[in-house]
Amino acid sequence: MALKDAVLAEYDHEMATTRKLLDRLPDDKLSWKPHEKSMSIGGLGTHLGQIPQWADTILNQPSFELDGAALHIEAKSSRAEILAAFDAVVRSARACLNKSDAEYSEMWSLTRGGREMFSMPRVAALRTFVLYHIVHHRGQLSVYLRLNDVPVPAIYGPTADEG
Image (cartoon, rainbow, N blue to C red; front, side, top):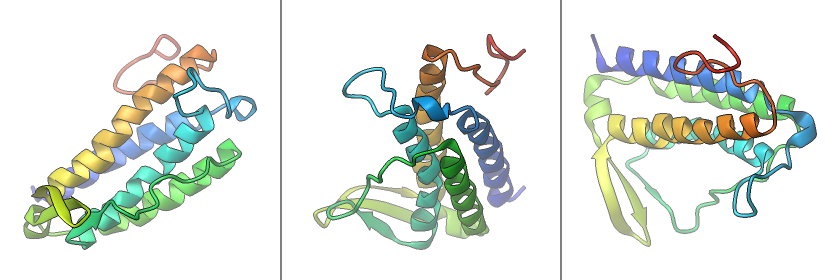
């Protein structure tokens, strides 16, 4: 099996699971936060909806410079807007995944102020910055939903709401 096939299967599974969670966002509570230092539900949903765009940078650029990068975007104002943005980014990112094993094995670097912070194979960077990053924030969102009495969908197995 080519590395691409494994990455595509993992990507498709995680994006479908993420979409199920985003589809539960309560429009009437998008500004809710569990703590003053936390993102709002809408902000977290917006962030989750944009994470896949890193695939293009990781797979088509040799590195990314953090200094001067606009990393934060304004929260979307509705679940429909968040889902539409997520769907577009997921499609665009998936198109970037058509790479050979050799391309997935090439090194990619994250830099700040022109200094390399770290370097790793593109496939590892994709998993770290896209897939694991999404899983992390999806876990946060599932807690936000639970705290607002919104049924949490099955993620890797049944939840208290869905068996």
